[in-house]
Image (cartoon, rainbow, N blue to C red):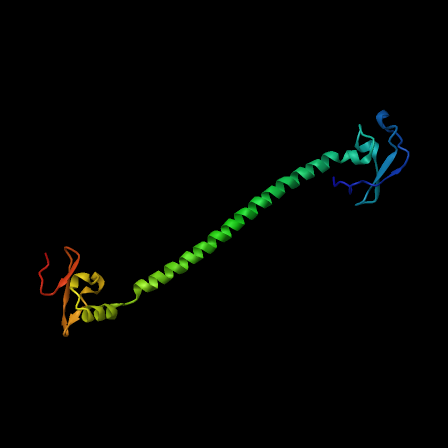
Length: 158
């Protein structure tokens, strides 16, 4: 049953066949959905006004609204956390993409320039660029796989 708006508009009307405790209650209420009369004596047996008939309904609806409000608040907090987490993940993803692109870049020419200009020893060249180092047009360094070292081509791998 849908409760009437609060406060329920009541008008004085005789209440025939009312239980004894409602003899003083001569209020009749109008259901605003159907415009029909609601005799208070037929709805509530121990109250003296129409509004009291719906107190339990109003309390129940208020309680449900409080629970719903709590659920909406928790959902909003979770949604905010989710959005923040997704933004951080997107940021990390962009950083990983940049790092991957940097790592995939070929820096052989830069290492060759440093190797030649500063007459570096092969041991200082990263393994990924070791075999590509040249001196006077000839291969200058070799990768020793057993020891994972970059050594001069003239040196023997241990």
